[in-house]
Amino acid sequence: MSLRLESPGWLAAALVVVAALALELWARRSRRHPALRYPALPLVLGLGRTFVARTWWLPTALRLAAMACWVVALARPQSAAEPEERQSEGIDVLVALD
Image 1 (tube, rainbow, N blue to C red):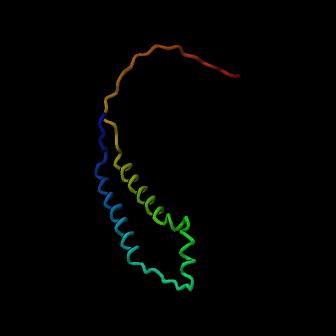
Image 2: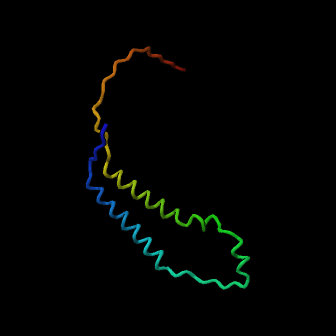
Image 3: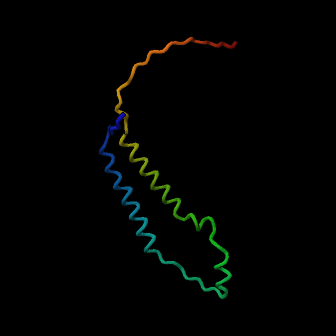
């Protein structure tokens, strides 16, 4: 079984995904991080990170994965295997409820 693409030109749209990734990385680097002055810094450091702080990257990653899946779907991958005819025997059962 092999795989072929009906519209391979849509794979060029993958460049949009790469551009979106580059733009997101550039935007994150150019943001200034605020400084926090706190008199008891060891108390703050002992708190740990929240769920949101640990998964800040997840929305962007899911957005980029969705864009990549969209590009592949537009390329319309299709199975190029030839159909097989199979012979089988069996009994047809019909259940009718009134």
